[in-house]
Image 1 (cartoon, rainbow, N blue to C red):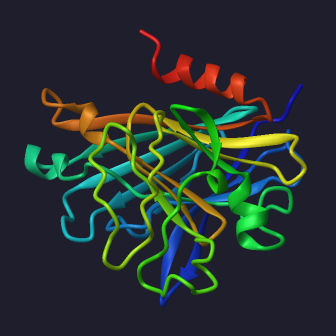
Image 2: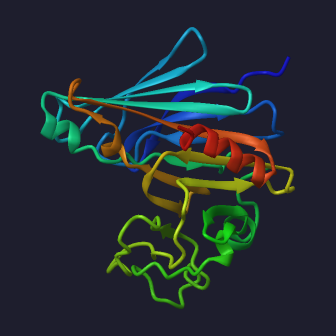
Image 3: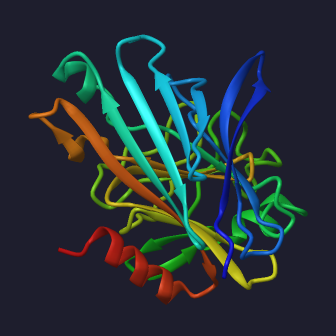
Length: 264
């Protein structure tokens, strides 16, 4: 019988403060240990609970709205992790103010998925999104410099980091002081990475996101559009994302994603 994915809560020092991480170990894939930082935004450090069934639960409050609560419940299977998000607050305005959360999915700990060479050639080249043309490696997309550094900076030629604006969102052009915004537009709320040996992939899917990112910390970002799941009767949000861990078969990944997020 295949082993379930293992989930552990970790609190690490970070920039003079702390951060809450879900450490994910995938027995089915060699040397795959990754961290999901929950969250890189105003929800900060959460209370962490490892449940008796092996699941992991975070409880966060908003830095500026202490009555606003976000619960993140991670449940592992053999080849996936279900990420359930619940937002509750005192009134509609506060709940609806949480349109997105910014988790940072980091692969630095994994010798099979993390960067072990030149960042662009060894890491970025293995990351992918889905566009009108199908699966696209990020090094095959049109990427723009991080505008906080000169265009000829070593980390801009070619660009190490990038944001991807989904096809259903307005493209803002290039920012004054941030990561570049690619010209290529994802058509699915799906982002992932292939292992260094090409045998496996890890991917992150959601029904509809407001943005996708690939960053410095051997990391991927998928920003969910939580507004789609606001329930006025309950004055709350319940929403679900899924992390996939599979053999490197893009067609099989897309079929699972479509079944999970677009089936009637």
